[in-house]
Length: 185
Image (tube, rainbow, N blue to C red; front, side, top):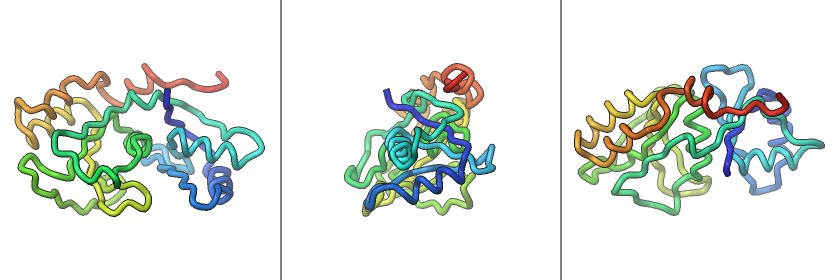
């Protein structure tokens, strides 16, 4: 089972990140709510950080990655440049979200355009490192927000609206309360 890790020592993480093997990418997403040098990383990035230190990089919290839902929809394209799911999921929890939807193409198959206004914008660009085509994502901080967006974007009776209604987590607080583990406690 893949996990997401909340690490609270940004200085140590930066030190280890610099020691990662050439060509390796440590994807670390700053926690946009907690701040203060805290980050979310996925399994592969945590493995790289652990290997670059004398002992494993301590995590304050861990979450089962599959608890953060990702919706791709019926028109998924440019698979070779899709980011790793753990990167999408870590990016989502960095904004205290519970899910994300791929929105690169709209329901008519037209390419969506959006320029995020900053890190807290719920719409963000993300692609595989070195990938050519960028992908547009919409993160959701709660089930209601996901349902409202997916109904508006895809329609009341769409696969996307059904996905949003079926999200098992109500909000980030519920995600942490029901799924987080605190290592060493």
